[in-house]
Amino acid sequence: MATWNFPHKTTAVLKALELEKYFDIIISRDYPFKFIMITEILNNLRYEKNIIIKPEEVLFVDDRRIHFGNVWLYLGNVKCVEMWKDIHDHKEIFSFIN
Image 1 (cartoon, one colour):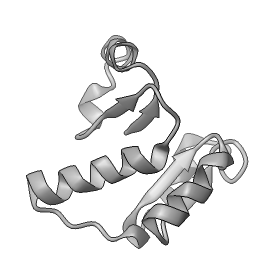
Image 2 (tube, rainbow, N blue to C red; image 1 turned 60 degrees about the vertical axis):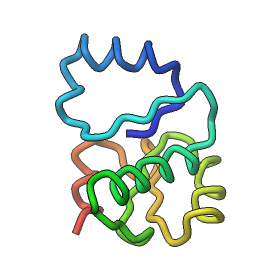
Image 3 (cartoon, rainbow, N blue to C red; image 1 turned 90 degrees about the vertical axis):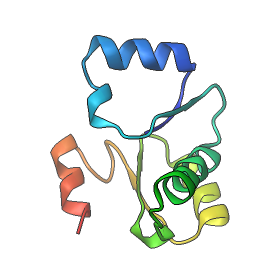
Image 4 (cartoon, rainbow, N blue to C red; image 1 turned 180 degrees about the vertical axis):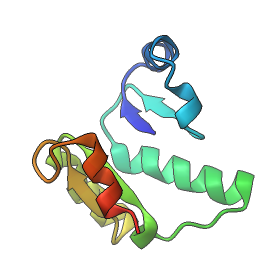
């Protein structure tokens, strides 16, 4: 998970909703640069878990299309999907996963 929130608030919300168990890596930053957060996730997978993920294997779902440009510019051919516009229900995310 890459989220533009204060880390302590992210942790509190995920715990309260019992959602933290669904995420292996949670990157919460108080700045909007999602491409940096996604890079942190990819680096964590590569260097700490020895899992190499190519940009075309990444699905980035966000409710603001404004983040997509930098993701494409800095990370490459990432599949970007805008929540509530490209998909209208959380279950639809599964249709983008091969």
